[in-house]
Length: 119
Image 1 (cartoon, helix red, strand yellow):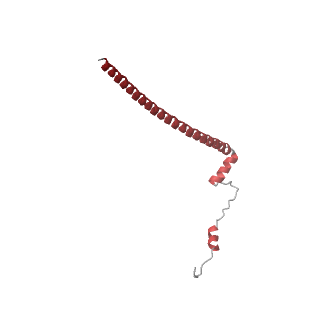
Image 2 (cartoon, helix red, strand yellow):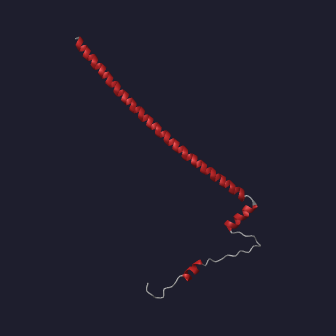
Image 3 (cartoon, helix red, strand yellow):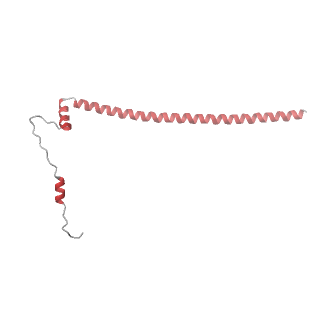
């Protein structure tokens, strides 16, 4: 009977080793999956951070540009220039002369006309 006990013990040790190996493999797989998910989250957060930094820089540039425009347009000369350019306003003593763009008329006059000849 002692031989039977030895074989049973060997099987138990072998069975226990196989279970430990499977548990170790499952643990490694679970750890790898967790690591990959965390890595992906960190990478996407870093990308989002860079996008937001670029957006902040663009908004700061635009803010500086708008402040410069505000400083320029706050002066009487800036207001006058804006009224002349965008609104077409003039001072009462000024005379405004508008020119007619005759480029369409000159284009048609400069083109040779075909007098019924073959092409």
